[in-house]
Length: 166
Image (cartoon, rainbow, N blue to C red; front, top):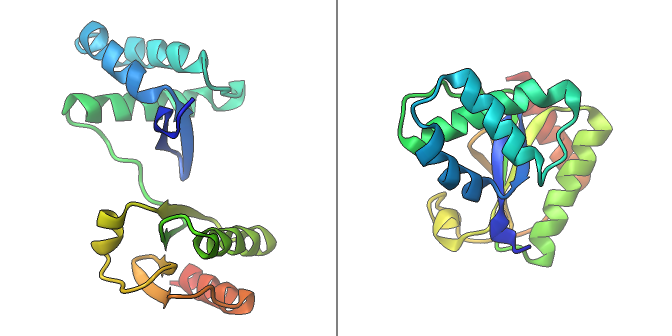
């Protein structure tokens, strides 16, 4: 399996990787496009469950996210998932320092119980859109907090707690 086989989608407030997502969307586009939403949800859940473990207690949430992403794929109107928690971005190509910053963030969030989504932006063209001149870079709720180094854990904790209060 290549890394291209995994697509990140938002289920509730969490980004999850789904294996084979693009292939299922492409295959279902012709067959399901005009069917009722409930039928589409059930079929997408069935197809994507073949390669992904989806616990019974959250199947309805996944099915809702699959339907939303399917509608996006078809260019139809859809209801966007409301953002919840902090929106955190690590900008960097995946070097040791960038990965370390992501690990530090996860550790601080686990330690403090702060809720948020961490998105590691690795594509140089995407990183350039943020206007930072070095990596790793850390953005919390769209605000640049650090560029060019991994900040100390206590500073990361301070920034996350500050952003959580806003």
